[in-house]
Length: 390
Image 1 (cartoon, rainbow, N blue to C red):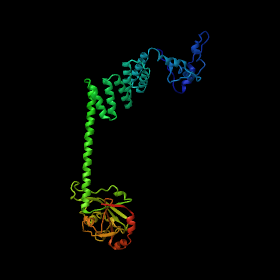
Image 2: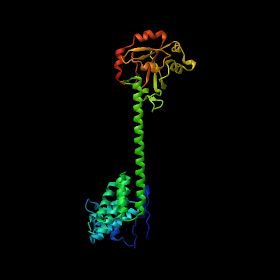
Image 3: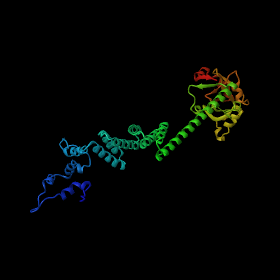
């Protein structure tokens, strides 16, 4: 076999011209089949060659003038010469070659063409369907794989390969009950290592999913039980919760909890928003106990570096601060710094709620307390609320 090296790159055309055969005196002329290329450039020659099926690098169904490529059509027609079973077998063999080369789309096309011949040979159609199912499995066309396997089982009710491939497709789309049924069915006709191995994986997945379902169900019941205990514990304490229309971002994820979520008598734990309205600042504490006092809260938040206590904060110490809480009616009530917070929350009148599942404590310097509280806007406070619920 003669190997012809075709130059690449910018020198392609020039190299072609240099090598082109030009007969000298006494030398033979080119034969007619080759002479037609003598006065054509490299690109034209390659274009002409590409119309010949043997040299094709890409499909060209024209004759160069928009007509039919006679040579290509003749080559195509050869695929359909012979008896139907011979034609179908030829397509099957071409499909097998493509499948071995992992060209699954091409293989699928050939198997489909083989089936379209409708040769009437059961074993041959069965093989084409099984092979196409294998292609669909590789291409993740799981539904089509299952359909092909069903057609095989209509032809051969005991076909182990059809059971295996459909079982594998069902497993891939997490249809575990269907996968188990078809694999059990296949094994009912005799032992098969592939079927047994796949069934083992299916049953393992079924067990894992059932264990996960039971776990989630148990967790859901536990969560609901803890929520019921929490709701009942707050009812027993007469603690109310008010929801704001637009709660601060920092407390949107706030959660009330019991120290022991299964014991309604254990301490309530909730976040606290400490507001300093006279200087337009605030602090946030992620968790405090219902048994904490405002004094303990103040001592915690005022434990700051000395430089914080500048002119703006000079009156901020536990002795010179007054605490207020908002009532369900929209007013304010002064809270003693030494009483436990749950005492204020459980009192029926005036009723002080939690806001958005968090304690809201207003803290102002004693020198400004009267002026600030007298300017409190009850209507505006009520307009900020969504509802009140126990």
